[in-house]
Length: 290
Image 1 (tube, rainbow, N blue to C red):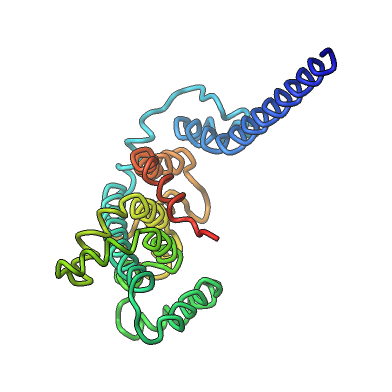
Image 2: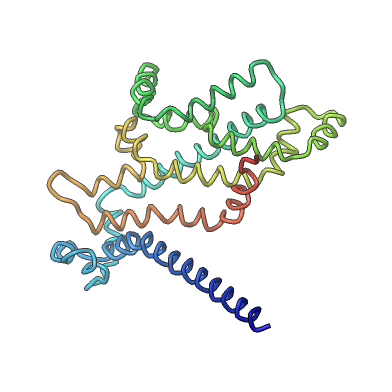
């Protein structure tokens, strides 16, 4: 009896130790990932003089003078509101295009039988293997030949032409989990493939579609390389590219740059906060099953 009691105590101590170690590790990871964001918030409220005279990062964590005017100066110094609106338009179109095209292509691969399906599916998987920088120059030359540079077309058009192999595979796995009897019953009632996709599949796919929407939003909103390559007109500049306006060859206005960065992060936080439930459900339901 005593031995069983001691064994239970040792087991409980071991479990407590493991839980404590996990909690400590999570706290360290949280501090590690949150520190740059806290530093950004702090610098966004400081004057240039205070930033330049501070010694190291730790000296900048608590501002001496809380300069909230930095957030107003962001809009006064550069057309930041236009950049914000441009990013909203581009991101909205990319999200819509990604959801429409990727869900259609995923439905074709998951539920339809057509010649060459396996070949084109393998070809789509190959696109995930190729590094993006290999296709950068050929893609630019293609858009340039069609006169599409210095516009939003190269940023938005790919979203309406498939939506990305990763998004297609994620949605396809979810479609495969839908019972085939539902599709057979709909066909007996006279529904076509487009009708089944629009009236039955899409309403059932809200979690995985929300996941894809979040991924597409984060990618489009934070995209820096695409606008840098294709957009030259200041009126078409997006917010990620517009943050460069606070930098020059000789100096950088760190206070305004960090304030602009904080503003640019707000939509990401809002989207994830409201879509977190669907995001987690879609990530689990759309996961590849063995």
